[in-house]
Length: 470
Image 1 (tube, one colour):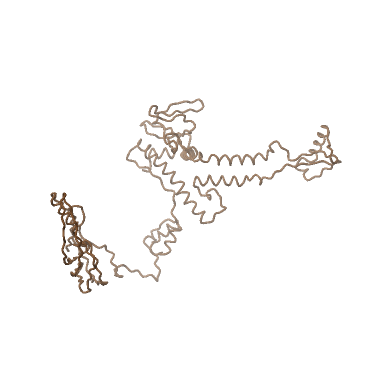
Image 2: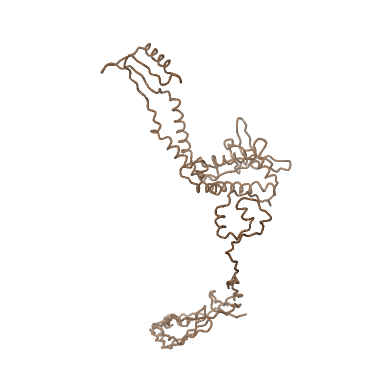
């Protein structure tokens, strides 16, 4: 919506401040103090149409559950204003999140005072701090003190000033009839290190606010690249966080007073990186038409350049089909999940029988040697021919409810291992198969759709996958 009461209030301010002055005062107060207050001026429909800034020093009390009002006091004006009539923009204090706000200058107070006092010290040098530039005194013979009467001192001072004071009397000599001593006070400004101190405090303050030094004209360690990048850094790291703070507060606290459906936003100050766009466009100049090139140059579009591409003569357009590249995504068909069956409850005897079976299962210690020709590959199945397996079984004693049983497991031939990708079913616990490398050449096949049916057990583990071509 290009026109709205809230936009008008933010743009035009109030009867005393313009919209720019209102926003400037608000942002300065947020950065320095950490909070600011707006008094809402409403129209006949009780909608805010203007905002009057109130300094944080005027606000004596903030709302509490027992007293939901703001206490304002300034030059004899004391007022209790309801909480609904004042907008409180606050940057909370981490040490007291339910109290007053806190700004950057709370942490930079020492640096600001040091810089201020260094400036005052340099200023006082021009007011001589009640000290003269030099002293003139009479000198007597060695080891003796010479004195001048007060009358002689005043006459000497008057004559000195009459002869030497003034612009047109500079560089004139002054002749004396006796030896005098002169003591000159030191005025070495470099010994005070005022300039390095002020530069150091300035850099600390700038770094806390995150503003590039080029924005303040500090170009000691700058070049063309850093100067150009300073605008991007200032907009992205300094302006955008403050704009987002304003937007979020106004969206949450002010917009509902007009209409809950409204969404407040701002135009981002982060500019486009034209250098990057130009460098990227130089690698493929034919990828943009004439109007896109004009936009990079900052010119308005023209109809005669719309859809016109500048293709070099040596460039031949080729599509993916001519290169034989298939850009279509493979279709694997549908995957159907079959819920696992509910395992039946077993009796105590069946449970004990399963435990005995697990304890007496044979362990294969020898290696199964499979010759090369015993491997047959058909589509996605691998069949391994059975081979002789030596089974080493140790007698085990099993105790069930106080009774002891000796279970002997005879030798048996190795089972057949059937491997079906991607699930492998092995009857024996451990099978080590030593087989040579097999090179499989699968001819190219046309894309096909498959229907996969996944079976799971009671523990939700995949037990079987049926693949059907469609």
